[in-house]
Image 1 (tube, rainbow, N blue to C red):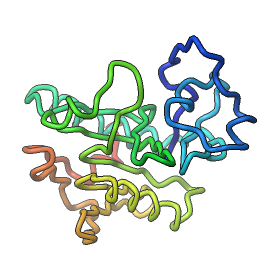
Image 2: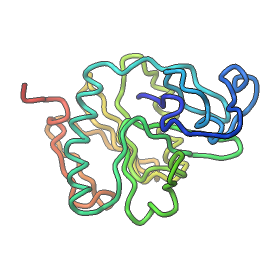
Image 3: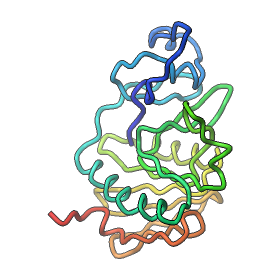
Image 4: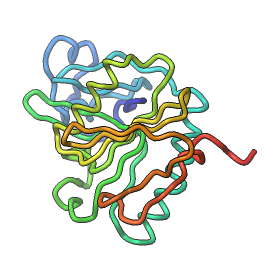
Length: 207
């Protein structure tokens, strides 16, 4: 689980952007969050308030994310299924107060792109698929909250990858979830048609 470096796109503004201390004293919007000066810290926005800074992800976290992206991106690109995003991308999950989350990996189907993608700014709305990778310092309750937030906003699936247990928990909008191990295969189902990847390949680089 990572966050957004403020701002992820270096958004320009003719107005004086709010500073982090000012934002800590009042509720801010996703647009104000995006316009903040880059302090090099990774944060998210929850109910109009900045989260505490997040430390960089550990090595295995990055390897898992890259392994998944390395399979998912070409599959989606070649079939024109939509777009894939890494952990630097913010998704606006709620408004008034605003909530911006950055999953480790995300996918938005082509049919949903016109309503969600802006030329500059966060993605408006949830990804169709959000992927979270468990870090050693993540609390179970925080992960559960993140999963619930994505699903409540309209995500069709959330995959939670646990490096220590070498499992993937696949959550659906009906509240059901399924845990699969290394011998199973990740299946994109109706969300990412045709995508399949052995769970084992998430954790086993060839060198």
